[in-house]
Each structure stands twice: as C-alpha cells, then as structure tokens.
Length: 169
Image (cartoon, rainbow, N blue to C red; front, side, top):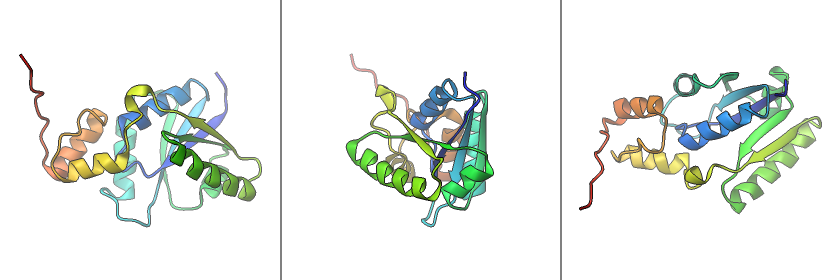
C-alpha cells in the first residue's frame, strides 16, 4: 500500500453509499484518505460541522480515513494537508467534463496536483446526493442509498421512517 495521501473533496450533503464505496476503494490505493467536507455557498441540509460529524461517523469503520471540514480553495486545503492527489468520482460523461475543467484550473493553481478519477461500483452508479436529498426532504425512504449513520441523521431531521419492502406472491 502506498503512503500517499489522497483528498476526496465534496459537500457530502448527504454522504451516500457511493461516496463510502469510493473511500473504501481509495484506501486500498493510497495509504491515507482525507475526506474533505467542503463548506458551501448554497443552502445545505446540514451545516458544515454536522456534515463533518456525520461523515466521520459513517466512515469510521474504514481504516486510514480522516474527515476534515474546510472553507477555502481546494488547492489551499491540499497544501494544508500536505497532499497532492485529488480523488473524484465520476458517474457520467457530464461529470467527467466538469471534473476535467476543475482539474485543469486546479493544476494551474497547484502544478504538483494530480487528479484520480474513479467510477462508482455498478450498484451505486445511479446515486446522486442531490436526488437522495430530495427524496429525504419529501419523507421518502433513502435507507438503501446511504450508510446507516447517515440515515439515522436524516430520520431525525425529516422524521422519515424505514419502509418495509412489499413482497410479491
């Protein structure tokens, strides 16, 4: 295993099973993974400190993972963490195009930066935190899309219940 530190940045609002999968896979490639929970200028379900707490709780079972909140440019956060690898998940061509533009801009600001793109596991390829957020806001059952710790926080916030699946004869 490498001793390299990779940073996986995002708002993680909420953290999904897709995010968790990428983190667990990244740990096998890098010695240390920092999940950088970014402040957001847009409204979020949970404030930054709570998103950091939720992510730390949900990812606590994965060794060599640290969760850190940040409110600065990503390249400045990378320098603070002595990291030069950014981990990004991409599900679609549109995701890749956006991330490629961000990678180019970040590399202009921090030439030592490298970006590693990971595709999600097949069972998580459709997951988007924005969709999970909307389902939760409307009281829908998102338990199959998020780690248990995240679901518990969503339940408290939105008073949603885990629904039993209907069995067909």
